[in-house]
Image (cartoon, rainbow, N blue to C red; front, top):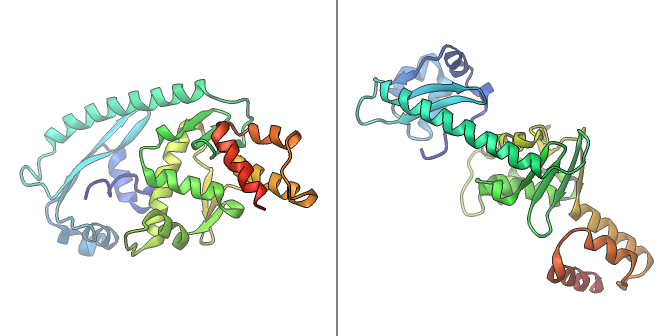
Amino acid sequence: MGGKLQYLEIKNFMRWVATLKRSEPMIFTDIEELRRTVPAEYDFFTQYGVRSLIAVPFSKRLNQGYIGVDNPKRYGADPAFLFIIAYAVAQELNEIKLNKSLAAAKQALKLTAGEVRINCFNGLTIHGSKGTLSEKDFISSRCYTLLSYLAVTAGNRATANQLALILWPDESCEIPMKSVRNIAYRLRSLLGYVGLEDLVVYANGIFSFNPEIKVVTDVGLFEELCDSIGAVDKRFTRGENHGKISAYGGGKMQLKFHMVTIEDL
């Protein structure tokens, strides 16, 4: 299973939510037990080869969820050891989340609530009113790719099929919608560290940036600049426009690359 049972959307597992609130373990020693009672769970687990599962809840201030083992070879009905591990995991997760929130807050720009600045040149950086995330904060490469793709795509929107081709270029994605929604859910969890859990939304078959949030990207500003230059003169000249480009923080080599691109228009 690896990490495929991580970051699942809560609404698809409401039975687990109820059990979590009661601090009770979830145990089934035979997947066939679920076929009639909860067929949706049966379908989900069988597609990943899960034949049995034991999972215990953890809940500690900032974090809550389950830690479990699929297809356990021993003690498949005894959750005692997992409860000990769950306690240690909860403590560690709380410390990680607090450290990330503090680090992000130290880098915060002077932005108001509802404003986001995304820089793609010279490395991905997301600035919100509550802090900043950089590419080193992205543990998942697919979360990084999803956000980057929306940031550089016209209209900051894409279908599940488009995103699936980008996220799994060398794999066959049988259920693009579910797979992309899972990555989007993980991305929103990360963005939540800086109060931007609502940045990426899904509606009518389209993933996009939330229209209620003012999102400014350096790529968008750069394209606007290119359009304005092209409307006046296709030749690139130094001066006001050069000053605008330097605001992207790309460094000398990056500025040189952009200048060549514009001169080729």
